[in-house]
Image (cartoon, rainbow, N blue to C red; front, side, top):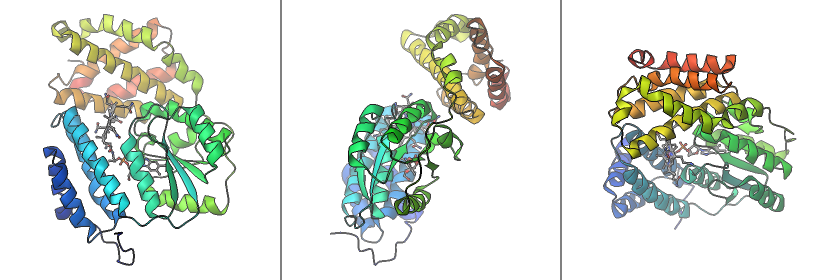
Length: 354
Ligand code: B12
């Protein structure tokens, strides 16, 4: 039985949606299913995705970020929401239009669920959707699109870390002659990064995406031939990353005496975080957007503080990063500017390294 679209769609209230997060945290698949079934009697699949599933997953992310839920809790919650998305999607009437849209995560990005949500939302608008899943290698994307010839491909990116992958995915789509709509939280809050990686449009939400896709299905845009991402600046950090991480790990104990007490697993985590810092630095240069690096440092500082590390940890790392970058001959004025901006955005106690 499908939701009857002649019933006016009504927003799901917070009271109605609220218990869903509790079901996720309890790992209660059947409870979640009952709740979603009850909601389907009164609300459209689209409203349930937007008002229940999306905010619940964002809440799970916040709880993981501030250490109120474990990675296992997140995996369980995501698997339940994945099932609910299938259930809600099955309640939407089959697409009536003849426009086909492909939806894929950019290369490197395994956030399949946000992309699938976007795909289901497009389906509720009548599009025929081919969902290509997580981290599709660019050459495979190209071959698939060249054969399918959809009206557009929606590329989903959930973390700025994967913007280099987005460059490759966009180039692949363009080689197949397919226009690219970029979306997802990894592209940020405006079209800056999306246009830099060469996408033909960026949408803040699915309503915006749908407007653009409608316009494209009437008249196909000329795809941009090349992205204007700064690959050179990106690769100058990225190619030196192993050396930069090694050197930082050697220098760090002088600035963070607490490191002496870390066990092997904690040291491996620290190394991973240092590698992320350099990756985000490189991505900021790639798309010339300081916000990416600065917001990552603030996010990382919050994550570490909620896991009981001193709030000064990330701030104390910055002079060490600077030293490693200098030794590797990678401290350009732009990189220096980014490091300063990052230090300035961290909470006062953390930027001082005290
Ligand atoms: C589940 C999850 C995972 C799962 C994903 C599994 C899956 N099947 O999808 C796994 C475990 C793989 C994962 C891994 C990681 N994750 Co994660 N993850 C999440 C979490 C909790 C929920 C994702 C989700 O379901 N979102 C659904 C909704 C909420 O997403 P949404 O972006 O709002 O999606 C909507 C729109 O963006 C839009 N949209 C999406 N795509 C597109 C495309 C187009 C064209 C358009 C128009 C619109 C559009 O449509 C959606 C519906 O409206 C998020 C939290 C969050 N806020 O998303 C973190 C989150 C994204 N992850 C995060 C991190 C850090 C990671 C890791 C790096 C962790 C690690 N150290 O390993 C890895 C990276 C792995 C990788 N290579 O991809 C951080 C990113 C922080 C940052 N600084 O940017 C987040 C934000 C958690 C947090 N609060 O800190 N993660």
